[in-house]
Image (cartoon, rainbow, N blue to C red):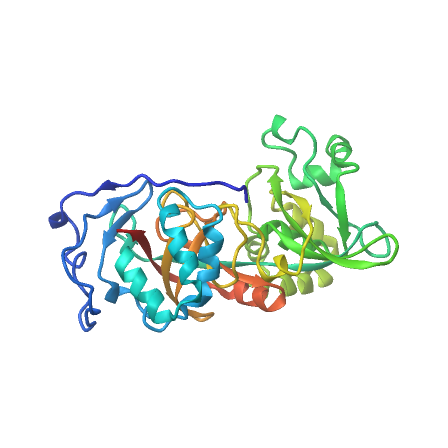
Length: 374
């Protein structure tokens, strides 16, 4: 999750007559909000999406959301705003102590909602979720802690892709390059795989003197090998559908099939390297930094395809499924290798076991509306 700043260049779409007839209309049965009148602006097109202007009444749950919960995430975005939203940040900060109704009124006055669609006009997409796992670790190997977490090796960028996961475990050249780069050791390879997939996490770490503290390990690079789903590998092996939470069900499988654990892990050649970061009490209330370069806010940050939605953009998210019913304001603050396309988002669920349980279950329909300055 490299710290990146994004700017947005938007160009008009073809005339509104060529768009779906609902583009400028309020859905049937929904009353127009007071003050939400007048002509709508022209549609906009991004690299991977088009934005169709709509009335605020189209946003499901807009009147019910506790907007103050999202305001912390918005203030975080204002630490590294793009050029489009930077002029609004002083007002956003002042409104942090305002009522929800005042915040809603300000949004109606200053922002225009646009429904996000593919270039082919498809507004339905996919929501998944991710979280920050918490692992037990030791600064020294032994006593059951045998699986290392590595800092990036010197010269990582000189060889693309770098060694695969299997080669890292078996080739002397790869092992030599990583010697001395260990941050800590963890006791379970499945939990380490989960940490590699999530991209960051927290370690309850035991120091050499026996003291314990909590640190964060954040994404610092990868071997740039392709990602392969371990869950899909298990299904392909005839193991059936792995039940949520993924880590616990996979650990249970591993305990019953110890001779096949290495084969399972090697089925995913992607390997993640980390950097250690201190974790203050203030930092502990937020997640790791996302691609925008600001800390993620549990339940209010999403990862997006920046070719569809620029970092720092406030987004209205609506998704209903077996895991969660979500209608809320979120901020586009991160991305991921699997987050590709116009209407695609990864919902940051937070830190720890409960967040991991939610994240493992979210795989459901999605609609998005960007809230863009007028």
